[in-house]
Image 1 (tube, helix red, strand yellow):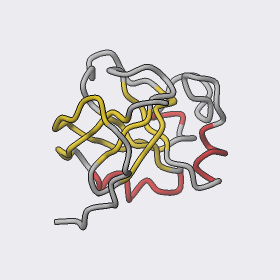
Image 2 (cartoon, one colour):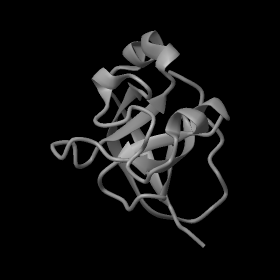
Image 3 (cartoon, helix red, strand yellow):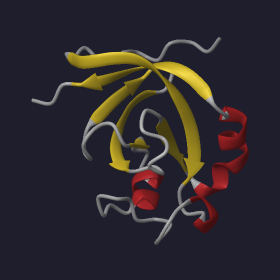
Length: 116
Protein backbone atom coordinates (compact mmCIF):
# COMPACT_ATOMS: atom_id res chain seq x y z
CA UNK A 1 0.00 0.00 0.00
CA UNK A 2 1.35 3.40 -0.96
CA UNK A 3 1.44 6.17 1.66
CA UNK A 4 -1.37 8.68 1.55
CA UNK A 5 -0.42 11.96 -0.13
CA UNK A 6 -1.44 14.91 2.00
CA UNK A 7 -5.03 15.76 1.31
CA UNK A 8 -5.60 19.48 0.77
CA UNK A 9 -7.62 21.35 3.37
CA UNK A 10 -10.33 22.45 0.94
CA UNK A 11 -13.98 21.64 0.68
CA UNK A 12 -14.99 18.84 -1.68
CA UNK A 13 -18.24 18.50 -3.58
CA UNK A 14 -18.19 14.74 -4.29
CA UNK A 15 -15.93 11.90 -3.19
CA UNK A 16 -16.04 8.43 -4.76
CA UNK A 17 -13.90 5.40 -5.57
CA UNK A 18 -12.94 5.51 -9.27
CA UNK A 19 -10.75 3.66 -11.72
CA UNK A 20 -7.44 5.45 -12.28
CA UNK A 21 -5.04 4.89 -15.18
CA UNK A 22 -2.04 6.76 -16.60
CA UNK A 23 -1.07 7.90 -20.08
CA UNK A 24 2.02 9.41 -21.66
CA UNK A 25 1.65 12.92 -22.98
CA UNK A 26 3.67 13.52 -26.13
CA UNK A 27 3.23 9.96 -27.44
CA UNK A 28 1.16 10.12 -30.66
CA UNK A 29 0.05 6.50 -30.13
CA UNK A 30 -1.65 7.44 -26.84
CA UNK A 31 -3.29 10.70 -27.83
CA UNK A 32 -5.41 12.14 -30.61
CA UNK A 33 -4.32 15.19 -32.58
CA UNK A 34 -1.24 17.08 -31.37
CA UNK A 35 0.27 14.84 -28.66
CA UNK A 36 1.25 17.84 -26.49
CA UNK A 37 -2.00 19.80 -26.77
CA UNK A 38 -4.68 19.01 -24.21
CA UNK A 39 -8.41 19.38 -24.81
CA UNK A 40 -8.37 22.86 -23.25
CA UNK A 41 -5.53 23.98 -25.55
CA UNK A 42 -2.75 23.86 -22.95
CA UNK A 43 0.73 22.64 -23.89
CA UNK A 44 0.47 19.73 -21.49
CA UNK A 45 4.07 18.59 -22.21
CA UNK A 46 5.33 21.96 -20.94
CA UNK A 47 2.99 21.82 -17.93
CA UNK A 48 4.34 18.41 -16.87
CA UNK A 49 7.92 19.55 -17.47
CA UNK A 50 7.21 22.47 -15.11
CA UNK A 51 6.12 19.96 -12.43
CA UNK A 52 2.38 20.59 -12.67
CA UNK A 53 -0.02 17.65 -12.23
CA UNK A 54 -2.53 17.19 -15.03
CA UNK A 55 -5.19 14.58 -15.69
CA UNK A 56 -7.98 13.67 -18.06
CA UNK A 57 -11.58 13.03 -17.00
CA UNK A 58 -14.98 13.24 -18.67
CA UNK A 59 -17.20 13.59 -15.58
CA UNK A 60 -16.17 17.16 -14.64
CA UNK A 61 -15.65 20.40 -16.59
CA UNK A 62 -12.19 21.22 -17.93
CA UNK A 63 -10.25 23.18 -15.32
CA UNK A 64 -11.70 21.20 -12.41
CA UNK A 65 -9.32 20.10 -9.70
CA UNK A 66 -9.38 16.52 -8.44
CA UNK A 67 -7.76 15.03 -5.38
CA UNK A 68 -6.62 11.46 -6.17
CA UNK A 69 -5.59 9.41 -3.12
CA UNK A 70 -1.83 8.71 -2.95
CA UNK A 71 -1.24 10.98 -5.97
CA UNK A 72 -2.39 14.42 -4.91
CA UNK A 73 -4.26 17.19 -6.72
CA UNK A 74 -4.40 17.34 -10.51
CA UNK A 75 -6.10 19.79 -12.84
CA UNK A 76 -8.38 18.32 -15.52
CA UNK A 77 -7.12 19.68 -18.84
CA UNK A 78 -7.83 16.73 -21.11
CA UNK A 79 -10.56 14.28 -22.05
CA UNK A 80 -10.69 10.52 -22.51
CA UNK A 81 -12.47 8.26 -24.97
CA UNK A 82 -16.20 8.57 -24.29
CA UNK A 83 -16.41 4.95 -23.12
CA UNK A 84 -14.50 5.98 -19.95
CA UNK A 85 -17.06 8.28 -18.37
CA UNK A 86 -16.06 7.69 -14.74
CA UNK A 87 -12.31 7.15 -14.98
CA UNK A 88 -9.39 9.48 -14.26
CA UNK A 89 -6.31 9.26 -16.49
CA UNK A 90 -3.16 10.73 -14.93
CA UNK A 91 -0.87 12.50 -17.39
CA UNK A 92 2.76 11.40 -17.34
CA UNK A 93 5.69 12.56 -19.46
CA UNK A 94 6.60 10.64 -22.62
CA UNK A 95 9.82 9.44 -20.95
CA UNK A 96 7.79 7.78 -18.17
CA UNK A 97 6.28 4.93 -20.23
CA UNK A 98 7.49 2.21 -17.87
CA UNK A 99 6.07 4.14 -14.91
CA UNK A 100 2.68 4.45 -16.66
CA UNK A 101 2.65 0.72 -17.48
CA UNK A 102 3.51 -0.17 -13.87
CA UNK A 103 0.74 2.15 -12.70
CA UNK A 104 -1.78 0.05 -14.64
CA UNK A 105 -5.44 0.20 -13.60
CA UNK A 106 -6.11 1.04 -9.97
CA UNK A 107 -9.09 1.99 -7.85
CA UNK A 108 -8.58 5.03 -5.67
CA UNK A 109 -10.57 7.57 -3.76
CA UNK A 110 -11.18 10.69 -5.86
CA UNK A 111 -12.61 13.96 -4.57
CA UNK A 112 -13.82 16.80 -6.75
CA UNK A 113 -12.45 19.96 -5.14
CA UNK A 114 -14.78 22.89 -4.76
CA UNK A 115 -13.75 25.97 -6.73
CA UNK A 116 -13.76 29.38 -5.08
